[in-house]
Amino acid sequence: MTETDHDASRATATDHHASAVTLTRTGTCALGAQGTSEAPTATGKQSVPKTPSAPGALLVVGDVITDVVARHRAPLAPGTDTAATVRTLPGGAGANVACWAAHCGCADVRLLGRVGAESAAWHEQALTASGVRPRLVVDPEAPTGTVICLVDAGASAERTFLTDSGASLRLSPADWSPSLLDGVARLHLSGYLCFSEPSRAVVRTAVASARARGVPVSMDPASTGFLEGLGADRFLELAEGIDALLPSGDEARWLTGLPDDVDAAAELSRRFPLVVVKRGAEGAVVARAGAVRARIPAVTATARDTTGAGDAFTGAFLTALLRGAEAEAAAIEGCRAGAQAVQLVGARPETAPAQAPSADSAARDASAPSAPSTPEAFARKGSAQEGSAQEGSAQEGSAQEGTAQEGSAWGQGSVLGR
Image (tube, rainbow, N blue to C red; front, side, top):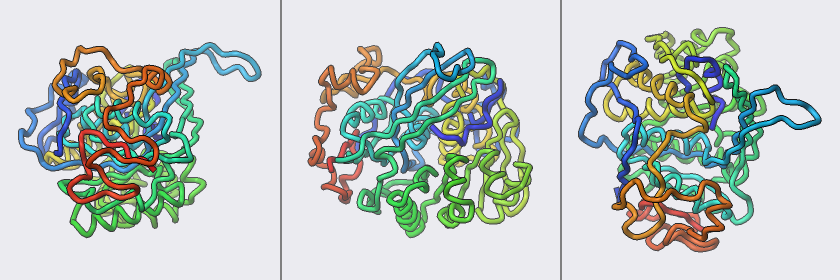
């Protein structure tokens, strides 16, 4: 989850292969064609048939987090109890973007992230069930990051985060290899990586690798709160070499010091080739070369939870770009996905039930029993993914500790011990 979707708190929203897993999904995003200029309706009637050919993979590098979502209808009562509905869900800005991209039809979505041993298999199974090919490095010391999401269940559906980044921001250059870009057509970096020194180094290394191969790179600034601690100048320096910056309105204003997010989009586009500002209920703005090129209206939706809406926008936007859409048409698809996201509880799209791990799980019917819903339930069931690594070992055929070997970087699912 990410604060990139901060503006999506109102009733309308935008921010809201070795082998690939084939799933039956419902309610997937309908992606428009290149050059689409008319906004889609809430029913999605503006969509056009999807391009049949696979354009290349999307690689996301970012955070994998356990979300504890607490939806409360009454105001929080300091010093005493407030009734709430509490759920534990898989999340993380990077992981969410990957899941939404797969949901919106990207045939090959890959994710590099770092998790703790206590929930590695649970996160791997959740990602695989969403159509993502994860490569998760298991941290021997830190647990998986956890975020407590306090969601106002009233009309605003606004949320506040309490964040313990845990293992997610301990991703380091040792976890990266240029071979991870084999077959990749776009690289997306979660801005959360900028907020810790080990993961900041990964940003620099990954961008350099992508530039050397001619792979375009995008980044989402992720969190106004953390940006304030880092500083605008330092973030912009870290983002140097990025082809597309995808901030929220709050983030765009903060990075430029301008009071209007449309003006901020234009200003940022003097520094980055493409800037798309996600404006929540006001849609999105596309800017290039110091000028706003398009204003995309929002898709009307009744919001239940705005968590992850910006991640949904990003996943759909990148999927459309991979299919050859212009940025304006891709932003329309982002708006549609953001509207879908705010109608759900949690940061990810609904998927077919995850299958119990086995050699033929990819061929099983999607109506098979679902996987345990929390890391604790997963551990109690004792159903760690077949072939997943124990701490200190790697999955058969995957990379050795801390490295990714040529030709073996991506499997159906991979958990690397440390």
